[in-house]
Image (cartoon, rainbow, N blue to C red; front, side, top):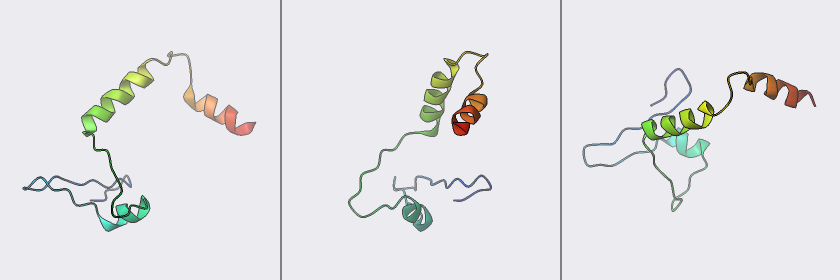
Length: 71
């Protein structure tokens, strides 16, 4: 469930079912009939590492964000 990072984790039950906690359903405004896409955490992490690894080392995303917010 919730941990100190603010994330909500769910686990696959013995029969392969996933229960989405009410707090998460409310936060995401999920309704009956909505479609969700499930990906394993490892797949998402790998994709993010691949995207961010293409950013040159001399580029500071923090500095770019701050500069963008000042405009």
